[in-house]
Image (cartoon, rainbow, N blue to C red):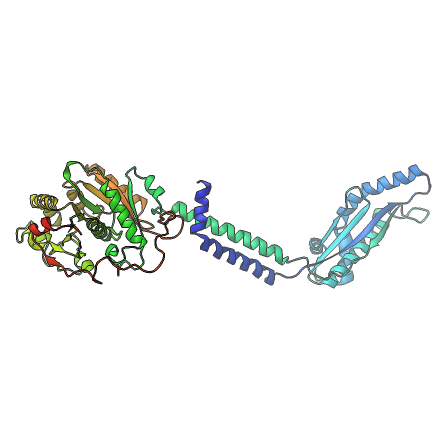
Length: 482
């Protein structure tokens, strides 16, 4: 992935990262509170070699010898011969070997100094152990490692240069370090999970995701509306809203398509249900009507019709009645609103939708609509659910495939396009719906500032759509544009 993709992941999942950062801080704070405080105290010894003579060369030799034996002495400090007497002297509840884990010894480079450090949960005990270990070590050197000579003096002398002091504060836990470490770990875990989720997430989020699957053009990006159930035809109810403008942008792109000899009859479908195909069909058709065109929108989803609920029209009679010869086309076409916008509902649900949609009568019906209207928009069922969209696509200029951002998966789109390609159905382009209005994948208009200001009022003079009425074919052909 590129840097911009990592930044995009951070923008999308910043809440997750922040939550884990807070959890990391909490873990660091909890570890600091639960940990037993540890205190350290240090004593320092100086190692020197006695010299009977006082010449410079003898003094130099003695100093060099002292530095050479210091490293050996450092290793002796943590042995039982030194620590066992300390355990007995201080009456510690441990053995000399166990005490060794609380004692350390080191010597600065090129020096004859030995630093003995003791660690304990008690500040006073840490100082006592450090001093006791220093004294015990001096005694071991004097009596065992470098015993006294015949003249009564040990050739090596250890001098305490610094007694152990009672520490005023513990060395651990280090609250700042624990908090910083917890924060870093929390950030890393949160961001790692965000990246993993993105890698495993097969949903379509952006135009780039669509471009990776197909070279078909993206004709429109319809921004999401949380109140879509209350504003199905937002091009009418809120014509100046950003969402309505996105439908008009789709209308403009559709008008520039080269559709060949089959006229401007389009099928709108989607890979799966609940991706916004019906709402897109209705708003696109109404936007075309607002531009002065005569438009008919046909409810080709005979299995799950929704036009009557969305538009508040009579849905008892419609396309199925025309196809079986029970009604004429002009009898079931209904005008909605004040523009040249006509609706052909599905009618009663038939037992054989695919056969009806693929019948010769359906072809005649679409041909009649093509002659009467400038645009015909057919709302078809999802591609992966049934074959109805493929059947309708053969009779029209082509399909517009609707994909829902953050909902449609890449596999679903691939399967749908593959199925349409196999049957030779022409896909004219794709429409992305439910695009977020904010964020890196949001729908934007550059610097025009749509969406601001007071809520827009519908273009229609009445606050609600005109009551639907049946119209004849002659009325549909002769009605002038607003």
